[in-house]
Image 1 (cartoon, rainbow, N blue to C red):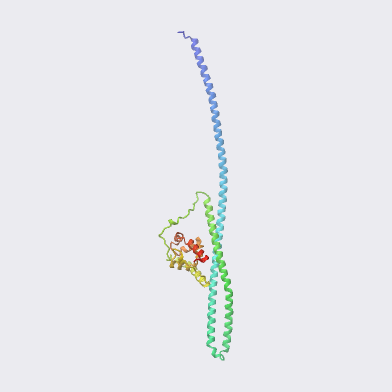
Image 2: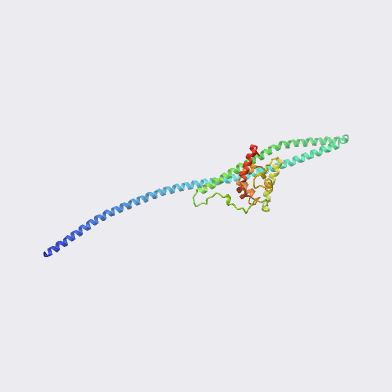
Length: 315
């Protein structure tokens, strides 16, 4: 075995030191490359985050602009609905005024006819006393001529009043349709403004309760004033000579309900077929549970079918 000298030990120590230094150098180079790679990865991630942040800012700005447009459209629709409501109210007032004028005209006409008949009877009873009643006959003849002239004047004024009433009624129906369309537009715009708003879901007609069946019992004295308007409409419709349909042909409408509908001015199938939400609510205040029953039994659909049959001559 060779002898280990100090030179050998020193050479071994120097070799170990050189190896350690070389290892540290190699490890430092590798650490530098890894650090560069990590920095590059972080730079890419930061760049991607900046790009995503800018995209989100642009998208948020676009959404805010759309939201502003929706809010402006909703505000315009609400203002339009308010204007339509005011116009509808004014039209109803005009229609009521025409109905009152028509009623007054008919009352005056009936009074004039009754007075003319009375005068004619008096003339016939006094025909045998021509000598003593000549002056009275002339006076009464003049009165009869005057009454006849007034009667002719009333007969000439009556058709324009009826035509104006029909025009106002048509305008009221058109305004009701426009108001319903505006309300639907408002509901659609409010539904598009975001998920935090209330969403309108369709009503399941089968889910409507059966406890509230239609009844002809009045809800109370609070509707006495509203009952006067349908009664006036019924009298006006009767005086004009509107031919009513047999509303009992609709499933679910009995004699009592038909009588109530007639009192409210509803005589024909097309009036039920063209009922709006406003009309349904107005009738629901006279009949308990009417709002659910009209959907459950599809009165509007039945009325349309019966109207079509009537128009085609099958009824």
